Amino acid sequence: MKVIRCKIFPVLVVTLLNPLASKIIPFTEALWCIKNLVYFHLMAQYLYDTEAAIEYMENYLEEFHCDKDVFS
Image (cartoon, rainbow, N blue to C red; front, side):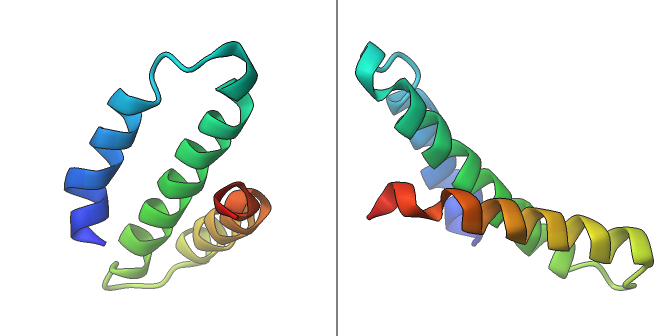
C-alpha cells in the first residue's frame, strides 16, 4: 500500500492528467478507485477505531467497490 500511495498513485495522476475525451470517465474512475483504496488502508492503520473512523472506512470501501470494474 505504501508503494501505491507513494509511487503508483502519483504516476497514475500524471499519466491520466490529460486523457482523450472518450477516456475521461474511465480515467477518473480509476483515480477515484485507487484513492479510495489508499484512504481505506490509511484509516485501517489508526490505533483507535472510533465510530467516525469506521464510517469513513465503510464509505471508502463502498466507493472502491463501485469503481473497481474500471480495471477489468
